[in-house]
Image 1 (cartoon, one colour):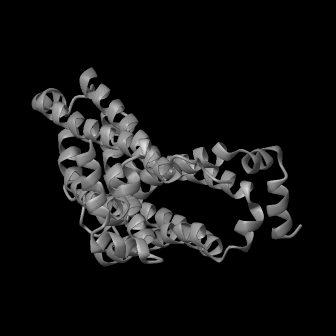
Image 2 (cartoon, rainbow over the protein chains, first blue to last red):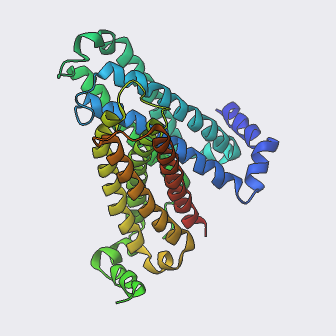
Image 3 (tube, rainbow over the protein chains, first blue to last red):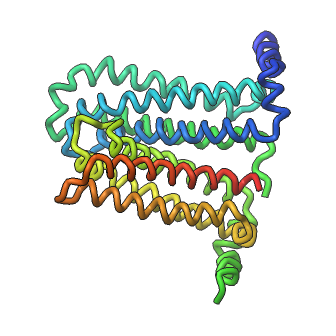
Amino acid sequence: MDLLFDAFRWLSDTPFSIGVRESDSWFSIIETVHVLGLAVMAGSVAVVDLRLLGASFRRQPVAALLAQLLPITWVGFAIMAASGAALFVSEAHKLYGNGAFWAKMALLALAGVNPLVFHATVYRHVADWSETGTVPLQARAAAAFSLLLWSAIIVLGRVIAYYPAGPTP
Amino acid sequence: MSLAHLFVSVGETPLGLFMRDSTWAFAAVEAAHLLGLAVLGGTVMLLGLASCGLALRRQSLAVTAAGLAPLFTGGLAVMLATGALLVASKPFRYYLSDPFRAKMLLLVFGVLLYIFLHRMATGRRRASEEILKIAGSFLILSWLGVGLAGRLIGLF
């Protein structure tokens, strides 16, 4: 894994990374943009998940709501990915040994696979259940899993800043 | 009782003392505050964008507003409860913080604007598109202000 560490080291030595680290405010600004992207992305994902679980927009057809929210989710994702990448490279050398960072990346990968499986399986027959009151169990399970995953990702994102010393009172 | 006294006495409640003395309680409540932000922030963005005609265009604004209302209330409840606990951990620090004061003012404005927009969207009389666009833009701006001020509390 030395190669990976060298890559992380190299990333955090780029002029961009050094510039962010040496500035008083850039890290906080990018962090704030990251949290803004979080609201747009996780918020729209939560609306979709809660619809599948029957907790919101119950009378709206699932397919129509999902199709309309997907572009918003992608916009949020773009903001998060760009700002997240900037945060990552600016302290890559420190993140290499950060357990919370690796856990977050692993859960992000899962959160990426979850909708792929959802769309390839139960969502292919969405026309059969979109306008009926009952959402198939598999779709509800995917929604609950997604809510859980994103909650954990958000919490881990916060923990990264505390790792490994823990919060200071 | 003055506002300063109120803040101090909140910090002296058993819950306030627990929040002050426990290292992990603060972190855990902060994380829950962030989860509330995801739901509340997302809801505000969606209603604001929909009012401006930039999102959820294939359903009426009334349907959007009605569907988002429980998420707004739920997200706000989580944020207020966790926010109060965070304040209780260091009441005087928050009392003296300018960004905190700005955040509270913007928060009141943001909540009132949300209720106003919700009523306009679900009311029987159709509001003009221009008014909805203006209200929607101001809704997003005011809540961005709440978030920004919140971030600044931690920096100053």
